[in-house]
Image (cartoon, rainbow, N blue to C red):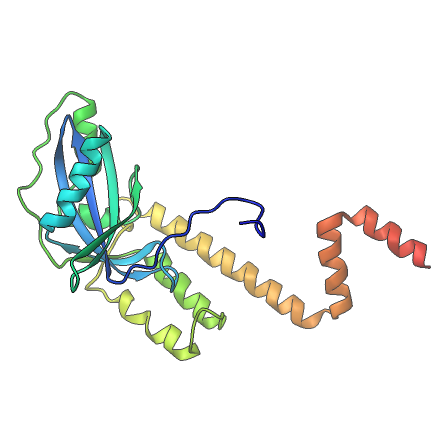
Length: 241
């Protein structure tokens, strides 16, 4: 792409819903396997899952994920993400996350404890994963939901309607949906993340307020100073005097 001065790969827009297969490979076979589907994303065009629902492993999708990881001799955890159009039965590979995934809390809430199983293998123990897990369990990334609501409050372009952007995210805060991060045994990670979001939004609000108050000419000087340095800007202004 000459305009970007770089090479880029373009991902085809495949219809259907997301299908995420989470696997812990030990040896030549998966030790634990589960599947979930994103319901809400952090961005309208797709992104980090904000709300996800546990599903029964689909034989076609899960089979493709297992064959792929076995072919590359993968060891450890991975999330293989697909786009699955059930109407046409087309399955498109999106990516392989060779690390713990953001919706890991959903797996743990369903009793599929990937971190413990991997820890057990690393310490010479044999984990005893459950033969099945509850289907239909939903879990949310609370800060992601609040961030979506904050974007709607700022009336950013990605939201078609001010109120629709807010009300469409409120059901995701339902108590019936489990939290991916918060735990009464260890609440600090969720608290720290929420405080960081609050500070970030307050900073953004302060910037917007200052921009409305300050003259546009002064805002332009601030932007030039940050880009080229205050000394250079001051020298240029003094030469005009």
